[in-house]
Amino acid sequence: MNRMTIWFTSDTHGYLFDTDFASREPRDQGLLGFRFPKDENTLVIDGGDTLQGSPLTCFCQQTGEPLPFAAALNDLGYDYVTLGNHDFNRGRAVLAGYLDALSARCLCANVTDAEGRLPILPWAVHTLGNGLRVGLVGVVTDWVNLWEKPEHLTGLTVSDPLPAARAAVEALRREGVDVLVGVYHGGLERDPDTGRLLSETDENIACRLCEQLPFDVLLTGHQHIAMVEKTWHGTHIVQTPANATHAVCVTMDEAGAFHSELVPARRGGAMTQAQAALRTRLERWLDAPIGTLSRAIWPGDRLDMALHGSAIADFFNAVQLWASEADVSCAALPNDPRGFDSRVTVRDVVATYVYANTLVVLKVTGAVLRAALEQCATYFDVSADGSVAVARPFLEPKEAHFNYDYFGGVEYTFDLSRPAGRRVTALTRNGKAVGPEDALTLVMCDYRATGAGDFDMYKRCPRVRQIQTEVSELIIQYIQKQGHVTIPDGHPIRVVMGEKMI
Image (cartoon, rainbow, N blue to C red; front, side, top):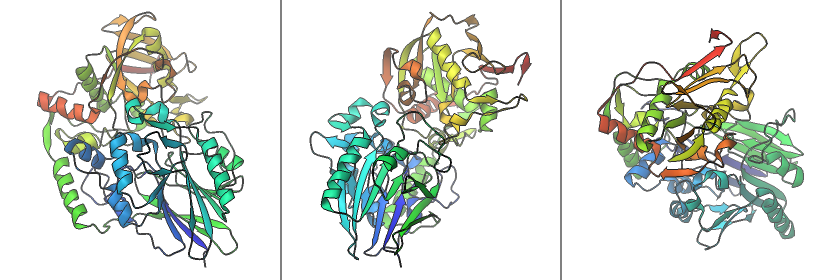
């Protein structure tokens, strides 16, 4: 007999239905594929990143449909949520509407609202039916301040999560609780099995939270790593994969020991009448044709695309150059892009460019551009026998292929026989070498313009302009305006190993 059960989801990213949106085929996925058996000793908790990240969220943004996630969480019996970094992406009004509609209480100790409009609490005490007093604290990575548009944070303060969590824990101690549960939208900076350092930044500080605060359980997110039955410094740690493929069930037995397991979503989850009608409208929108390409462009192996170029990334760069009139463009691919059929539908666009990004044009020098290319070249790890693989920082602590950028408007060569930091051996524009002092305009997504992904060279570059239309919408506009788009052969990148092409 368990004394307590916690059902935990995180990073569901707008995946409500049993679909990955790339096709109509049902999958074991989506919030509606979960059912949480509840009694008076059970809590259902979400770790954030609920409002952004899927074609459904894009549909709601572009059509004005109300977000359906609060209603879904209410139907599933959620008790508590915290905020994820992507929950700020649609702005304060959308976030407020979501929180106001939730039956669950939002706990986020390091987010404060100067106007007092957002219903956010730092902590809560929940007394179970058996009398067990559970103290709960929520926090989110403060890298929100780095990534988010400033206007979305007006009146909000996102502070360092560690001191905020510490203050909340001290308050809970004064309340007298039996069990302390942390809900952290952030990940682990160390491998819980080996202790190996995974990240030297403070984006993810779950291990530090466990070392400095007496949590019995820490529910983590953000990194999208399936993690159960792990401990750090005596704290039981779990994490879910992304996109509502699995939940985690944590139990506390009669002896006070914690156990956890991954529980998959099931296809064919029951829908309300309103949800079924929404699904019908969504599928109709996704299947709407918008134009044609001269050929279909599908993703290949990630390493192969990075080495030899990607027609999808080149297409993104063509759109960004068209929309911005910049000299140069850089664009990344999501970890799992869908690709484009020759007859393009909205589904192709929003399932291939999955982010809610807008564009920023920076004024850069040739030296800055070369430094950015050198950072991209760190994607490749070269073994002693000359074999090439994806470098560990792009795979751990989570897959981050989206931090490898493809460039358009320039031609460039990487020589992988050279050490990282000295791999760019050619950089030209219109057949002319780009010198270190040459001034250029460079368009990129707003995420990259913050320097995210170890592109610190962009942080001090002047901003020429911002384009507030989301990139997915720009892609749709570009195709609709062109009607038929010619996809060229060849790519601007060339990768060699000494004198030999790879």
